Amino acid sequence: MTSQGNTALKTTQDAPQSDIAVSVRNVSKIYGGAIHALNDMTLDFPRGQLTSLLGPSGCGKTTLLKIIGGLLDQTSGEILVNGKPVDGPGPDRAFVFQDFALMPWASVIRNVAFGLELRGVAKSEREAVAEKYIAAVGLSGFEKQYPHELSGGMRQRVGLARALSVNADVLLLDEPFSAVDEQTRRKFQEDLLALVENEKKTFIFVTHSIEEAVYVSDQIALLLARPSRVSEIIKPDIDRSISPDALRRDPVYLDTVERIWSSLRSYVE
Amino acid sequence: MDKHLTSAPALKVLSIIIVFCAWEYAGRIPVSPAFPTFLETMQGLWEITIDGSLLRAYPETLKPLILGVAISAVLGITIGVAIGLSFKVEWFASPIFVVMQSAPLAALIPLLVLAYGIGLTSKVMVVCIMAMPVIVLNSANAVRHTPTSIKEMGRSFLGSPMEIIFKIILPSAAPVIFAGLRLGVSAGFIGAILSELLITPTGIGDVITYNQAIAEYAKMYAAIFSIIVLAVVFLDVIEKIELTLFRPDKRVSA
Image (tube, rainbow over all chains, first blue to last red; front, side, top):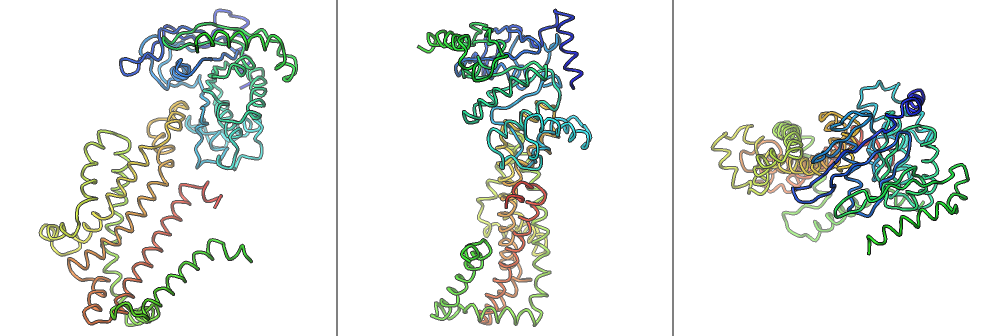
């Protein structure tokens, strides 16, 4: 797993032409022949970075994420993952769901190992991998618990561990922290930054929180609705080496939040 | 001390005692000369047990009951799951069960007797007509209402359609399928007794009719009481099976 992460990093350095992990090319999605959820959207997701899809409800951010994940079919256009067009879900992408999508009848370890179970990995092997990621998300000791015995934040950690354990290049996160409380969310955002740093995977992150997007993202795609489009790509130039608390008071951070809000405000009004 | 008084078993026993006391009291007023007290009924139960009539009656009653409930469970859950998975199957099969559920059974029994005679087949049919619709409709509903996100989860982690059905949809639907199964089994018990009262008096139906005819009301109520106890025990066994097989999470927390 780590070795593959390093390979991905090396590819980025050696071959700059492949530093785009996911590429969205002229994708449109029309529901029921009339509702344009996405309109000729083109967007690139750099490898090893976290890109946020930020925008108001109805801008098609979740639709775009589900199309990239292969859970929805686009009406036209194509999705390239590592340069190859994809059609449907694949082993190169893993999804983290807004409502966690855990199986209530399965223990934490079975939930985390479920992606590998569906891939036919032997029980002892998949549980060893699951064990490792349960520890990585800070849930050691909870392996035998059931989801209803965990808090919302812990449930989403299970969802995250499940997505990490299949070792996909690209992680798709659909508003993963919207159903957890504010304190837990801040801790989550800090952990997510560490994860992006350590895992060397490409993260695509849907959120409607400007602060959250600026805090965690290398790149923010600001989406607007009616017609659905990418209005702006923002790369927050924030020094990530400072402490999380200092970061939240960092002038660059605050200015970027303000700048995004002013572009969205004109749209909301 | 207080904790013991309000614990689940204590409350269950208390509720049973209250019902039996009320029954005893109503029998002593008396509500009707044909309504025996609880203690008289228990004595009647003792008598029909030792004279062997219950023992002879139950195999007769259990035959159509178990056969009918087994057919309804297997066929009902299969059809119900198919309806829940596919709208085409729903449009094709669902009207039959909706009609079956609302049909007045007593009016259908003469037709069944004409078609299948007065033997085991007709009685099994009555049990099935009573038990199957609720099993089918509950299973269909449970499957149809599987949360979208866990089905999407299965697809996104590359589950095959069969894996998604057996590893996600069925366990998720199991509680409601089993609720339907319990309702279906209760209805099956009613159907079994009904068929013995309306088609030919055999088994427990015979014990009830016979004792009613000779005004041995205590024994008649004892027979009814015994079938209710059997139904309750049977339902409890189904619940245990459900928790053991499908819902380890509920078993742990309970």
